[in-house]
Length: 330
Image (tube, rainbow, N blue to C red):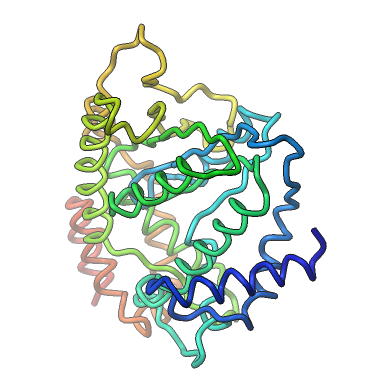
């Protein structure tokens, strides 16, 4: 399929979806070229086999857990397979290209403001892949915060008429304090390297992180219980991974539970809870580096109305820093 044919297919799909799907509110035919460009970056080729086999993995973890690293590990462990990665966060920076009235968005509002447009891009790309590129292996990532959304995605792959998908769930279990610290580390490192960029950066609050943890645990337990009944079974198998000791070492064996292995006989939710509620000390150098970044970028953080809230959240995570953080906030 050449680019002109792909653009036409996308235009037709958008026109169809906007007429029947109330969830598509921003996209129109004029966005087809942009979406075609995104899809072309995947270098997709449809299979010549009638209804080929392919793998679909839903990779779930709370925000800050390190989903991108686990994606790279799964890809490294399966070098014979080319995976398309679908993550709504990948499409957030296209927001102003999709909306009719581009706006300046603060870091604190970035995620909320871009949720709808990133979802619509994700949805159309997924549909084009399923309809036009049978046999494509796919990894979809998310926090498992909304089980209805996850269920909707999985059922779409299950009923796909062009590809026979095996569908699995890969859960990443990380100590809660570690993933919480990571949301600040990720954001503040972006702040520190932004240079002259005026593009908004994605900020995640501790409250939102804790909400994703709570919903992740609850929804994983629901999925595991449902999976015991063949009628309600959502996934063919469930695997649980822990975070790598060295994020650069993709060869490390981090798989700690696999329901396709009857010998293991481990509870998925029990394994996850054991890891997430385990103690984990944050390396002092990482914490010191974060405090240095806050000091160097205090003006930017204050301008974003995030300076005090970040200090407050860090104080909640590390009560031993109370005196230092109080002095810093003055």
